[in-house]
Amino acid sequence: MMDEHPSNVRYHIFKFCLEHCHPPSIGELAILTGQPVDKIPEILRVLEQEKHLVLYKENVPSQTPIAMVHPFAHLPTPYVVSQGEKSWFANCAWCAFGLASMLSSTEGPIQIQARSGSVGQELRFEILNGSVSVITGTQNAVIHFSVPPSQWWNDVRFTCSTIQVFESRDEPEEWCERYGFDKGEVIPLDTMWKLAKAWYHDKANYDYKRKSHSEVQNLYTSLGMTSSFWAS
Image 1 (cartoon, one colour):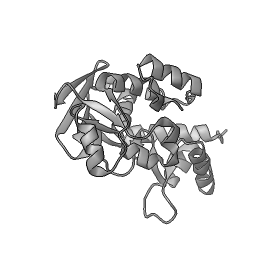
Image 2 (spheres, rainbow, N blue to C red; image 1 turned 120 degrees about the vertical axis):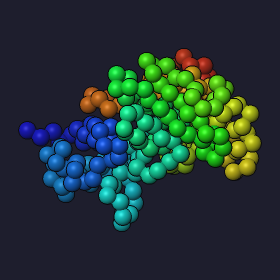
Image 3 (cartoon, rainbow, N blue to C red; image 1 turned 90 degrees about the horizontal axis):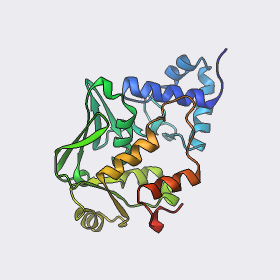
């Protein structure tokens, strides 16, 4: 008996992304879930309304209707996560570390490739046995959030594009001024890794449950993210 619940489709999207490094087509989802092809778009719209993914606008000539299913990006981005012969595009710095947390360390080291502010020094990180090390760049890397959580889904593509990794804490302010973005909050690399693991490690599970508001706030507090910026 086929499972008609949207969570089943969500589950297969994540499994497909992990295996094939990009989101599935409508036809592929129909085969994976046993759903009629003409029902898949309706289910995808439900998942978008529930903020599980972002769809392309109609008539975009894409093989998949899915533009973003955090942490996976369909379109190329400066954030590339690799393990063995596989590589994935991530939507932002946070998504890159989140995607890394979803991969099994038993399959070998995981690498994240980026550039400081997407335009500067090349940065490479490696995750092995649950720990992050810097391969290229300095040990002072930070992640800058321009948009506060309460506004993330006003335009999540904009939000993701502004979550950037930088080589040092000195760079985000100058970058924001140069490219016309609001200066937000900066967190160190180790905090980013802890946040990414807590947020994403179980997202590919069938029974995944989004964190409640209180759970999110408790997570921020436990990581020292206590300024008014993080209130949502």
